[in-house]
View 1 (spheres, one colour):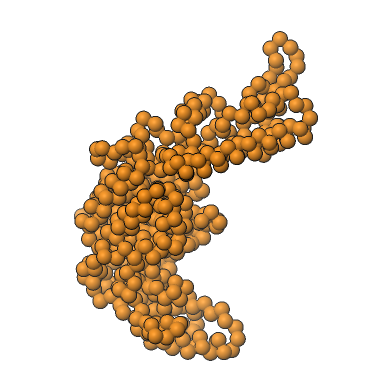
View 2 (tube, one colour):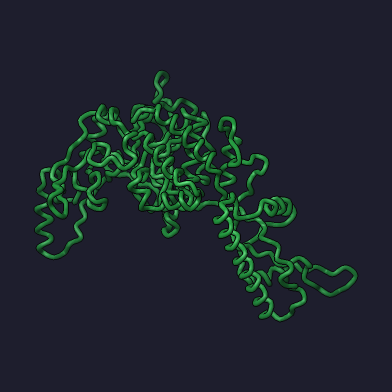
Length: 492
């Protein structure tokens, strides 16, 4: 954990560990073999492997069948109830290799009543194919109906349902999206939020459809409430496999606590990104109705663009606003001139609801796409490339300190196809003076430790998707703002 004091109060950055899972008993396999009658170790292992294969095939068949029928669970509800009863009596299951299962069975041998010979217990060795999350609260039955207002009990049961890899019914999804859109459209493009004494604000970075990271954050810091405020800083969807569930959870909490939960738009909450990066495909696989994806996209258009905390912290997904004017007649397209933000009124008057796609070639483009750049990195080695680089350094928009390589100014954001800009420390400080803040908190970039500070500690990046895309080993992080008393009469 890393913490620092800031003028707006106590700011702490916490790395979130890997998502916790709870293991529950696997399906009954007692009829597949009788372990106590087999003395040969090789034979035991073969039987265990055969049983494991049968169970895997059965689970895959259940999943395929559930997708064809579009039922709410790949596991029969009656089986879930049976497991819930047994889990109180049986010890937790460990994910074991087959040979470990044999050794575990040997350790559980008991003295047969009336005799002196050790025999394996009649119950079969317990082998977990998957670590399953807590069971759905059957009495709440979210997804089947939602006649009244959304309550905390409903959201809790809904999250349990999502952990069990069960989806909501399409009518309930539409209800949540519609109610959330009505709440979001009433908010300005830039939310101004004050964190009262005794409360805290948790800022969450990119989640990218990783539901277990969201649930783990709730486990660490508590679910949103009137005293436990949250700000989710965009990129809720794409790349992960539970983007629908992440959005529905965030929207449900926004409906329940509209003045304690805030959402900023990211560059992935746009049709030009969701069509190519997985979210549209996920919607079509989970729901037969093609309008579900359209409803999600329409609600994204109402997401605010930025948030200012305690008049001092500017929270935005990407970075400084603006866009590069380009010469479209040349190939490759060459950025010619940077059109910068002149005043906050340009953002506040922007009609965000018109843009289901990314608002390119507007000042809002930079808010969603820009990245900070601290040092110039020249990876070219031959003389010609070095000469071209020196010419580039003489641009009227940027310069590089020849002593330490520090970057100043603005440069086309080439890694992101020139969307937004790369900005140096001087441009960061200039923008903060324009908006009257002393710190920028942004997301948008993968970080090994989940967070990073640049530009004289005035630009903080937070990224909350740990083990990103299931391939990387990065931490996730969150930022916590808590007001502190500066003197007897003033609280910042």
